[in-house]
Length: 163
Image (cartoon, rainbow, N blue to C red; front, side):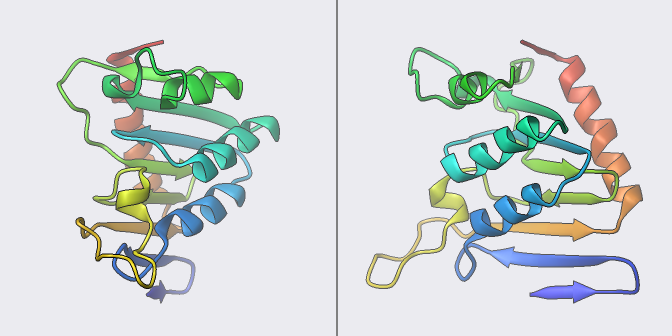
C-alpha cells in the first residue's frame, strides 16, 4: 500500500502479499549519498548486491550486523560484505541486536519486523505452503526528521561495535 502526502510518502509492505526484498533493492538503488544498514539476520544476496553496488557508486555505505552473522561459514553476511569491499561493524554488546533498518540519504528510512532473510521478506509463491512468519517493512520517503533519528541510533549502535 502506498501512502503519499505533499512531500513525503510511505510504502507499507507485508510479507504475506509483498516481495519486500524487491522493494528494498529499488529503495537502495535510488540512494544518492548514503546507505546505512542495521541487520540482525542477513541472507538476501540481491539486497547485499544492491548495498555493494552503492559502495561501488561512491556512496557512504556502512553496514552493522549482529554478531550471529559472523563465523566460520565463508558465505555468512560479514564475509559477503567484506568480499564486496565493505567492512561491516559487528554488534556484540547485547545478545541479539534486533534492529533492522536502512537509511538512504537524509530523508529516507526503511524499517520493520522483517529480518533480511528470504523467509521474512519474500512472499510465499503460488503452490507453496504458507509462510511461517508474518512480517512487515515500511519504506518512508521525504521524512528527514525520521532519517535523523535513525541515523542517531545507528551511530549509537556503531559506537558499541567492532570491525
